Image (tube, rainbow, N blue to C red; front, side, top):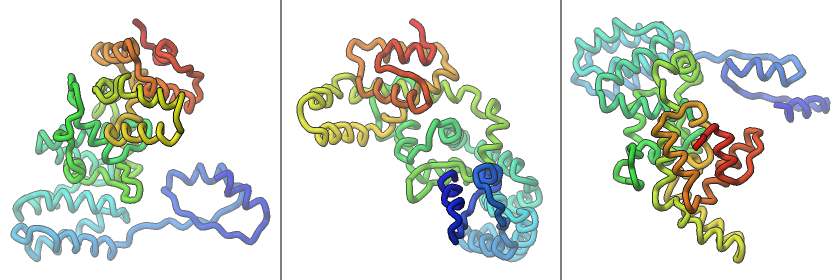
Length: 334
């Protein structure tokens, strides 16, 4: 935004058009020193109906009839209030039912407004305990993560069980399973493969109810990261070749070896760089013991400490490469 404002100050004939979510408006006004014309874009009812028709036609015909279809096309566009997201959540709630009677009942009890729709969607997730457990883990990671995660990183994170001693690819949940378990609350950016919440208002919703849904979230993420960093492929021995090459051969070979580790262990960079930031917020005894074990290794992994310190410096902290300094930064004693 600052660069755009600098260009505007050149008094050129340049015209700029950009789109944003409503919550960005205040930030834009703060940076740009000119008066702007704004246009609020909302979904028209006919567009929402076209979307609903597509969803109905793609669904199980045995649990749908013409009368129910007409009722859906009449009621949901009015309740959506110009928001596709509300319509999408509502139609998913209805089509998730297995009979016409239950679908009509769901239509009659659609929650009003986005927050109520989020409440209803999470309650729908609860109907399958296993789906609910995995879905809430997905939402926890996306909401609390220090940076956006790619699908493969999230799959690695969700595969880690307490006490695990090695990476288990057979425990990776599929991409479709991750999305299915969240009942439309999560989406994947096809260009970057990153997983994100379906709408910025869901972030605001979790800001209000973080203690309700993720009371121990940071601790669980920190423990997962630390467990991951104990896996055999990420111990000090795994980095010996890299360290040897760093002092002898070329940069490209060092990068090749490091990239090989990061491909096989997709969560490595996130786990190594961010575990301390989560542990600093929450850290029970089990997580604390894992942190002490990592920092007191007889042969600590230089790659892990390097990434940890780099992430600290990005946040403006003075971090020197060394276990003691890292422990001090994150308040870890022992």
